[in-house]
Length: 473
Image (cartoon, rainbow, N blue to C red; front, side, top):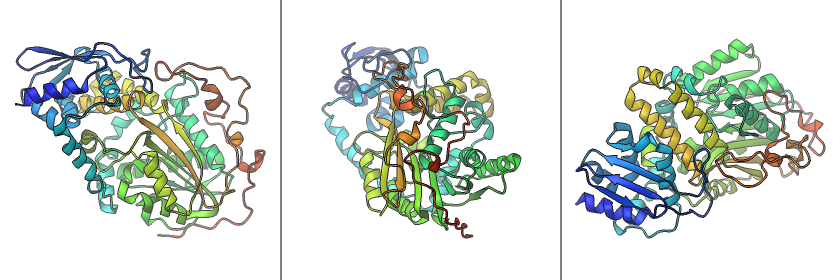
């Protein structure tokens, strides 16, 4: 029964490219045209055209996997790869994910028996993402309280666990992460002495940068006990205890007033039912002339459900919002949406760097955990990378304020040294047209201090009024 249903599903699903499937009994079936274009909008592996579907061969060794692929294909695919019951020729996981995502993004008839399952998954989103304070802490611990040694294997020295900012495909991960922090600091238009709240501060890298390089006084909050411990140790080692405080607390428990609020890679953990709560809290904590910068993975398509595999193994309670969902929640508050920037292939490059580092030190990951964990972690990084290259994921940066004139009225202040006729530097995703240097270049990166807002032509002058202290919890 399940074999014919899986065969029907794959016949409907795979049109572009080719999937050669070897079944547990040894017979082989081919699906797809063997060639074809997705019509743009993707991105392949390094050196591949973004819209050409590949030719991939897969072997199933467990008869039970057919049932799981029919009833819950996303979960079964990831678990099959983790457990070794689904093997890809040449271990070409990037190719398989690209083939699946290119076909997923094309208009296609849905197999009738998949429709109620997909509708149920979407309908259950609020229940799966009901992230109150207790559940939020549990969800965070499941991912961020893993071994410090694991994160040391693949993150940069500053432990930036979010999308980097590549001004050139030749940038190192360290350069790109420093450029990300500089880009965000420029959007915040920070002046020395400003009070900054870092919601979801991670291991403290952004807080340390804003205090050390921009003279800010920063409160960072996290729900991860490991991140809290490491971040506090880093603050002490840097001698910045007078300017940086790291608290183990939920953002909803923070009180006080802040000139600037920054949140990088945390909004994905808020959950759809809490979106308006989150933005109302940002509004309430922000000074009347303050600016907030919210950096989050986003979806450049209609709302969808979280991958069951990601929800089970990587980010319980997590959700990647569409632009319409995030904007609707912002519109429910008095906040001004001052600017939106969409970063597209930057996270794909970031994830590629991370996965290459994990694979280069695979034996150490196996020694820490086991072979199944290594395959799980590689699947997470590669599937995520390909969702940016061939899927519909991107990164949104929302600049928010309580006053219409809080931020400069043009983006000139972000690129004061942008060269005329900036040279295109090629592709971050294998084959991407257009000149990117004009939009990515010119911003001081790599530890450069960003000039205060008042020093930039056309930028609003920071208020001279005394900055209020943060109220104790």
